[in-house]
Image (cartoon, rainbow, N blue to C red):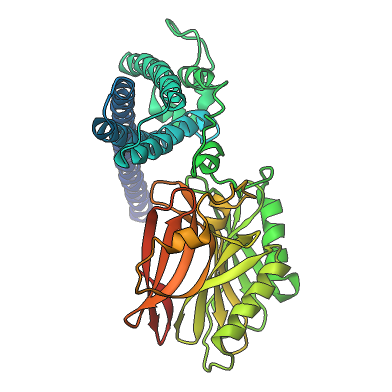
Length: 463
């Protein structure tokens, strides 16, 4: 072998060694990355398991408290003690429902359980108000509480069994989250039925109590009563979004994501408009159930204000009617940088339904609707069976401050922070130059709420 051949051979060997070194380094990097990813995934799974375990055990504790306080309410003999006990039921049931919603179980699978806890909360609150007003519970009230207590005992027993399944490793949250409830369908030792299915079977026949009172219609109906219709897929949602915005206005529509864990699951899209150089893209969300518009918005510069507030409100009503939202009434608004955001409430037989709200963004240069948000409407909208007021308008006026100079009056349904609704006489008036809204319960004449109306250069707000 001559010197030239030796040099070539040496170079080849050097190249082979260099390549081998690169391969070894790459394999090492891949191995390290794999270990890091595995560690991160393990940590994430463990964190998820810990989070779900915490939510579950909080649920168990609060359900036990609900059962305990319901039992006490059955033997309470004074309105004062009854009010305290029932207030605790309301609080504990609310917290139980909060932790139930944090478990990786679809809302359909635990719909009856959630409904039960919701009604326990609302019903106990309404009875506590009775006690606070020094009214004794009727036999019907006590019978209803007894029934709720029996169901709470059943729920507590099933949750305790499920707790044992989790402790023994037969139920794993991570597996449930990734594979869904079907993971429980298989037979395992010492479990004859799916634990969560057991919970639902306990309440399969539970249809909700029927009792007299201003809040009963709200309590006995399911949540999100305005969210009607069958489930749709991504393609159908895309078609609905395109039609809502206007096919002739769209240059391009892109699917962003499916918001599965949102309060209302939606298909989310971004739409690029034709001939809109100074406008942002349209963001629009279509509900999986029923294909309703939950949210749509885009922004553009509004350089001038060519229409007044009343005209803008009327344009908003016309827009809502065209989109299928009938009998809407403008209530309060705020105006910023040439854009007016207006709240519209549904009106049924001359009664304003404040829970059924839709918000619109209206451009004051040409009246274009820039945005819509319908969450309140989808949560609450339904045709209500309202009882006739037991307190007349004149009787309600007697409850008002004598200095209130009344400007308008009528019936309204107002929401409460306790997820209930109350039919009230609504009076708008002025005292010493300040505007107020006063709500008098149409069933018992009690003062339910007072709002201060704040008139600013940018709109009318309530506090």
